[in-house]
Amino acid sequence: MIKTGIGFDIHPLVKGRRLILGGVHIKHPFGLAGHSDADALCHALADALLGAIADGDIGEHFPDTNPRWKNSSSLDLLKRVRARLKAAQARALHVDAILMAEAPKIAPYRQAMRRRLARALALPLAGVSIKATTMEGLGALGRGEGIAALAIATVEVAKRTTDVRRRTTEQKSKHPTPNIERPTSNGKGRMTDARRRTTGNGKKQKIIR
Ligand SMILES: [Zn+2]
Image 1 (spheres, rainbow, N blue to C red):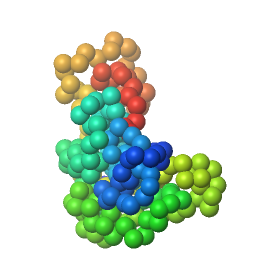
Image 2: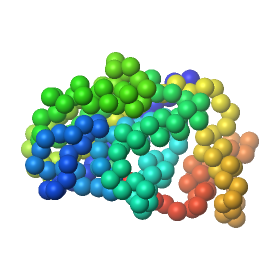
Image 3: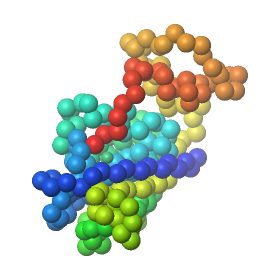
């Protein structure tokens, strides 16, 4: 079956950082601040892909409290998300994204971004669409204080009976399940979203930066 997911990310622009978007280094006096390379485009795409298989978000899988992801390449993170899709018997078919940036101009870098993203996601070039818009001077983004990205992913998922989150929760047998009442959504023992949120290590983690 075909599923879709949505993702959004935003990072502040600061001095002394390289600007990386879609895995491409862009010449600009400012770069995005964050724990990883702060590639807002890759992060939005990763969240969209995870959303399509209802598998949480990148803050959960790649927390900014983990030094492992410090200054890490977000293209690498996308490859790891692709592996999560594969484990869930899913594969990306198409991604589309909008970069919201007052500056710099994205158009000269668009093709390079599409190529890098297509390679990371094992998609044909035609399966990766990148668009960009300015905010017409409005708000924080319009003042050039940061760059945001919005993404949507179309994913083909093999017909399955088990929720991906339920499967991974059951595999984590070392982690004790909180002793709370098990709500069911349909009387067949499937967990509700509220239930899923409290499984695993029970910690809510910040979005990766
Ligand atoms: Zn981010």
